Image (tube, rainbow, N blue to C red; front, side, top):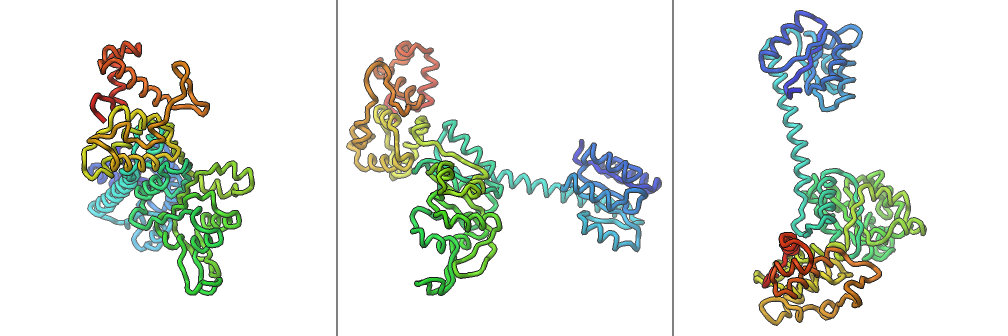
Length: 452
């Protein structure tokens, strides 16, 4: 169906023909209907962006056409035709959602003008929707590094959810970058120019957390010497990030639930206040287990987890480690071009990283400062990483907790190349794979002789 399609509904045959001819001549495709019933039938079939309908018709009036059209397609623009001297009817139609009206008798120029304006408005509205969608694509991932399938899935969810108002619950171990994801969601939303306020629920004493979140009024308790705004009010119009929300005391959880449901907070000792806040929460706890144990409210959990996002630990995406190492070298290296030896990179990729990305960043910063040569070697690694060995016994003796396949593959490729003096043909034969497959794996993991 053409974007320039118009549905014309008028029971006056002569006026309908003249109007149809005028619009057709102006370049529009016109669907003409003799009454409201026929018009609604055509509308259900074609869903045109603009409807022009007379208001006074037998059986089904223009009012009823307007109501049904808007109920089925709120974005459709309806222009009302009314008789001269019946402007009050047009005003009533505008209250019901009509885009504009035109009074009989009208000139051809008047008709074209009002229809052209309707299509211009429709185009602007579509452009606005497109811009909102594109805004979601612009979520700031500049500080979040990862090419693994697991991280690409996270990025995809963030792009799609950012422009919405949905509450997001980010789960993952400590150090995986939950606040970075929360900031990316904020940056990709319509609220990006407003405040992003972060609160670590685990870092604030339980008896002070209510005041911290909701504020208090002067005299509400000992030490409350003046009114104080809470984090909800500070984030009004923007995004509130509640980190470690699983640490929220049970007695405070109903107040948070009310703030989410009613968009209303109650400062300690004060009266309720409306707030407009988009909430993003994060936890490193198993909240479903906490619900079963009675320490976390089920209704609050489901209110928080409208969109759940899980960040995988670093040990489950070892293929991202070389990228992260390079990113942190660029960040902390002061502009120096610092390489990493293959052996050192293999050690880094083979380590479990219980502290996740945060631990890796600290390790890279340490290695940059303490390295003994122009590039980072195995001797420059922190002792616990340098001394980390895979269990011996047979070709593989995997730990009970498991070990990522990508890390095994990367180690196998490196070992095959070392044993064969970096001769790719012999290394491929050693691994019983075609040479082009070996080259693909080397490119995938950034492996090259003398390269970091």
